[in-house]
Image (cartoon, rainbow, N blue to C red):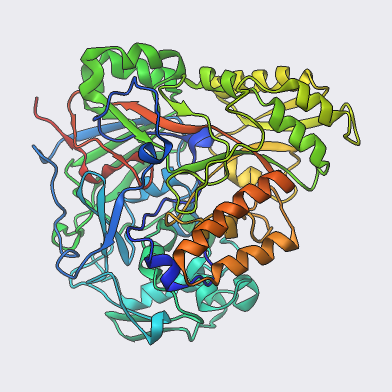
Length: 597
């Protein structure tokens, strides 16, 4: 995700915009899907139809009023259960930039703006804590927000404009190394950490004004017509100035949402209870229909799938935010007519990649040889077959404006790998028998995929040293500049469905906690990114992004494109309102309820 100073025209000429929460945790911690609909057993045929983005528009002040639109048949009360693989790495919203953790934060964290579901696949950007989606002036450089009456913290104290200002200023603090960069850059400079060090030394940002307790005004250095989209991100969730414990806040969050954390046993379980000071009348986004949430962690996809297939006892009231149908059970599930009413399906809005660390893997002949040899078909079969993925050959996801269909390394023509072409390139490589350290998520499926990659690359003389890594802290580990790895998976979702929120970040600044995971540092690419960002014509910009996509793969080859996933997911029979959010690609808690029978 990202954005430096792109033109408002380039953004809004697209029509409907959509936001995904930056890093996908797919391989690293999660997948999911959306409500039933089309048969899950059918293999996708049209990439553009299958991966079409949801419709997202900007709502009015009336749209910003609560309560949220209830799902059909909604029942209030009861306890709903959630089972998944990993606990959440961060409870400080400033450190959240992945879809799974962002999804959990819907239960405890609110932002100035957010996404209101108005129908399946249709959303509006509305005021969450604010009375509307923002008032813009000065050509897009000034944004004003007014807080709603009655928005409170869990202790009953009012959420004020001082909290909003403090929240934005603390993003500059040295201990905040994760999270989105947008607002910080727009308020100061691209290298925002050097521009301001945070509020803890007593210094404030004069680019944020709070004329009274209800009003906050942002003064950006350049126009940003999409600021209301950026502020909807969990990374800009509001933190109370009076309760800010700096680094400790990551373990001791203070709720502005409908629930509070009543009990948390790290990596095992969590219990949420109602926040008595949350008022549904102020919230157009969160239904908060169950009285309690009981979350448990440590379950692999096969365990989750089998429990949902059996659908017995308390599992009838259980869902998963992100556990896909296990690869071993995919065909069984999609062919079982009795499961179709509980089977969710949604294509991923993310780009997924196997990155090369260009600091260590410097030979382009080696990188291209690996692309030609890649065991795409085998990985697809291990992952669940054509019902759960399609072959991808590009950096951009097909749902992103600017996507062009090309196949630089013949992956569709040779899904089992073109070993002859790969060996030809290896003969030109500086090291004919290199050894690469390959980091992978320590899960059964990823272990099988790693074996397939290791065996396939051995055929062209490349030795893979496989390093299993903790799924919960995957991005914390791989986003270190000195991560000790040569190759590793990574996922990225456009914050808006344009490449302007992809390339400037995944090929942007290189630093610990950053998202340029290939460590691509090419002046020509950087110059072209900035040129395209400055284009006012959306059609011209989109074509340029697509051209750049192809050029990067052909002339630099910083990654191997991974499959485009189609998430399949089950839930218990007494769980109502279950739907995969097509923006976040996780089951949203906003519409969940417990059926009476």
